[in-house]
Length: 364
Image (cartoon, rainbow, N blue to C red):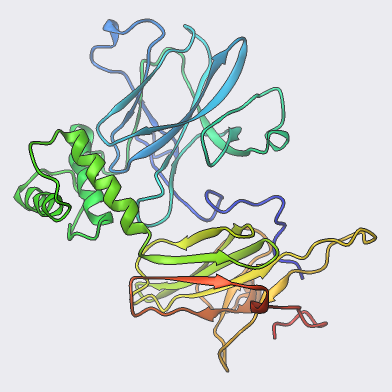
């Protein structure tokens, strides 16, 4: 059985992997749209994209350029800040946003329903060509009313003017500092914790809000490198990975993350402590020139005498619980345990870590 079609899946943001950012419009899974108080002062074609969430967002937009709708990305927008675009007056416009990868936990999305191109790195797309022909993925952009002067991304906890405080709190958490709750309420505890962080980073002097965010973002990127699970592909072929872990006593398994040869991926970006985390992987097999189909993927070799089994699916999946997999449309497979005494670990996978599936299709 071949669990994943590696030519058609991406791991970073696919249904089942993500938490969706909510909006103020009937709790729809799209950005909220509001009008700025001083909208009449803006040029007729100025469009403001504002971030009132607690996350640093990276934003892709699609505007009319030379007569064609042209998706572009990425612009980074910190909490409490805005990005300005100048589309032609009255022209169509689309927007999509996701939380930056240096935040702990899963990537959050703010989206709509119009499929347009994106890439993991900075990009410009041509809508007259398919995304696949441009080696691009797709995301569901929100179509924005051309009369709107401001589009604002929010969360269920609408932080409003306190978004910058909420963003500082979340980034302090991302850096491993104790913030009991991201609530956007400025107070002595948040101020003291921020002062401690800046002192630990040997950042001195009077700093602007933007400079504080820069220091916290730099620290969060460094912290991410040392926590969670990093899988590196030292084998000869692309591999696909999955993770299983306990959260508040409940098991959850997720997949798939593709990892190209000589590359690494991070399927789990929270601390591994107290998660009982396990992982699984498949190794693609190349199709022989004279064959109609490629051989079945090789499977991760188990190392425990009685390996723990978790649920996986043929395509992208997120399964709650580790029992009755077949009854729920999944398949049980044997995962490999991870060391969970510390916050993070890196695992290098080689060709020796994979075996062919048995003739019966069962794991061995």
